[in-house]
Length: 106
Image (cartoon, rainbow, N blue to C red):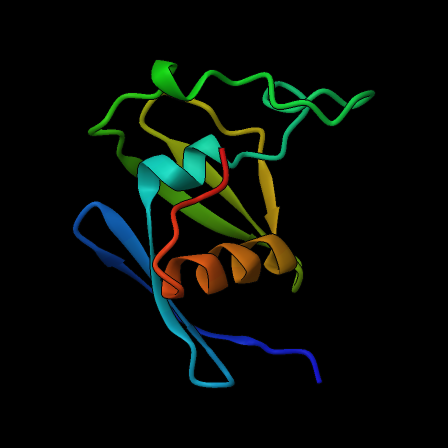
């Protein structure tokens, strides 16, 4: 059964995600930016991450987050980056990792 996002809220420098199976996890806004799946951040040919995590400000802000249909969210970050579309599957995987005590993949 596919889990559904049932809640999304700002929690300081993080976003709090709540899922239909009871998973409740927070992801730091900076970590979310580092995980951006867009072609500017990840090579379309090799899948290699192009974004240097050291280039992302520690105090990065999230200015807006908009749903894209029923399958993803588009984020506008304080560094004006806005081309990443985060599928719910990616957000779910990041939440699972966060709930296990891990950080976003880098």
